[in-house]
Amino acid sequence: MTNLATRDAVKALVAALQSDTALGAFTITDRPARPSALPHIRVGPVSEEPWSTGTSNGAKLSVSLALTSRSGSFSLLVDAADAIAALLETPLTITAATSVVQRLTTTRFAHEPSGNLERATLSVALLIDLGDAP
Image: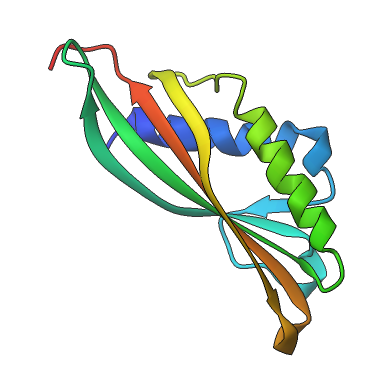
């Protein structure tokens, strides 16, 4: 991530996930889940590309969220995906920028029989306006 605003945007997303009561059962980190830490949301990787409104600079971010839970708890992942989509309806509070658009763009669910795990991969799109001239 190349600028402070991008880091702030990701931190704001993590803070929103951590404070959402609907996600209270989940451990939220940027590291792979340990079996004892399930259910788990891993934040990252994050990709960034320049974005502009024509009057100000910004960034288009794609943040991957990997959700993992024990087998048999598929509905927990579905509910978590719904909760994440709902929390994105409220603009994130970003110190160094303004959130213009934030939404869930893709969601994939899978069952991993060998590890007795349920998985979901979500992609969150964030457009942030830095407020400076291009």
